[in-house]
Amino acid sequence: MKTILRGLLAATILASAATAAAAETKLTMYYPIAVGGPLTGVIDGMIAGFEKAHPDIDVEAIYAGNYDDTRVRAISAINSGEQPQLSVLFSIDVYDLIEQGLIVPFDDVVKSDEDKAWLSSFYPALMKNGEVDGKTWGVPFQRSTIVMYYNKDMFEKAGLDPNQPPATWDAMVKDAKALTKDGTYGIMIPSTGYPYWMFQCFAIENGVELMSADGTRTNFDDPKVIEALEFWKSLATTEKVMPEGTTEWGTLRQAFLQGQTAMMWHTTGNLTAVRDGAEFDFGVAMLPKHERAGSPTGGGNFYLFKGSSEAEKQASLELIKYMTAPEQAAKWSIATGYVGISPQAYETEALQEYAKDFPQALVARDQLEVAIPEFSTYETARVREALNNAIQATLTGSKTAKEALTEAQATAERLLRPYQ
Picture 1: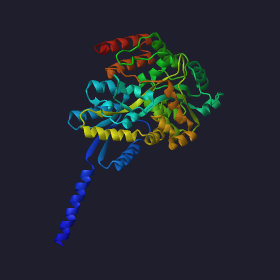
Picture 2: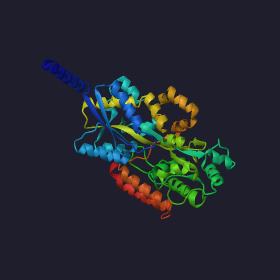
Picture 3: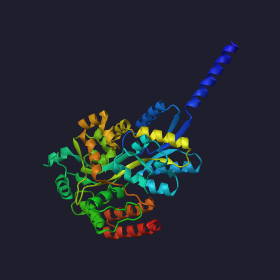
Picture 4: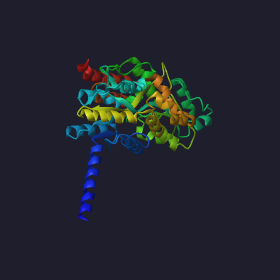
């Protein structure tokens, strides 16, 4: 009997040793949970599939709050010696992460021709926020553009063509006036949470980008930028088609679903939630143009942290390649509404079938043709705060657009001067 027990104990020890040997590399990934759509189950499913295909790699996903929370927690873990290997963070965090010496470029980790082909497989518009000084520091994952959602039932009731959403600023104002009645506004555009992001839409549609491509200069006091902010405010104060003051990012989707507005500008990352919650027929359209069409991209990129070992970096690369593969990208887009990050994602059977039944899913992808990088500079948090404050001061009437944006430009110039 003792011999049998000793044999069982030995077998158990050997099995445990084999299991430990199989999971040779452990990865910790910080992930921002506070974005649109049911995320946790999808991400957990991806990780389970990856671990099954790579039994030598063990992945722990830490769901850390919104983007800002995730960045703070990941950096705190690094500083306390609990080194994570990778994270999904804001694409616009790239300059700060480089300056703090926290990340490494993918160019240093990608070695094979196959890996290089993978790195060049994403939509170019989604790569721009991750490319700095000729190197790729961030790879797209949950990415978006801003689109216009509209209530087709309200359009029809107001005598408008439900299949012809407004394609220009003038047409948007005209339609919004027809739709504003009985306690319903024609349009709502969020001005809390990410006001700079929404304002980028107005600025680029009026022909101006808010920052230089190298992140060292801003154009806040350009006359066309001032004109763009004046137009945004006029939707409430002059045209009376939007509520005065600020409109909350976090509650706007529900306001649209409840019929408080006939049109809204919002992230395509809310598409699945709108589809699941709408009790009316709705459409999705590219944002209306003025001098040109356009929307900034948005969302999160994968980053590789510098403190990882070479083996951990290679394992992290394998995980990122798996999660950004066309099949996974298609699954992610369907589950959340985020853009399929590569043309190959839209060639998968799953996304083709989905788009056939739900063509609204293709609008954000099509808008990538005219998309620009999301606002990002050195000292990006403080520069962005100055712009956000200027936007909200204008919309609430405490300053004119020219006064507010001139002050924001002066702040940005002071902060960015060392980098020029």
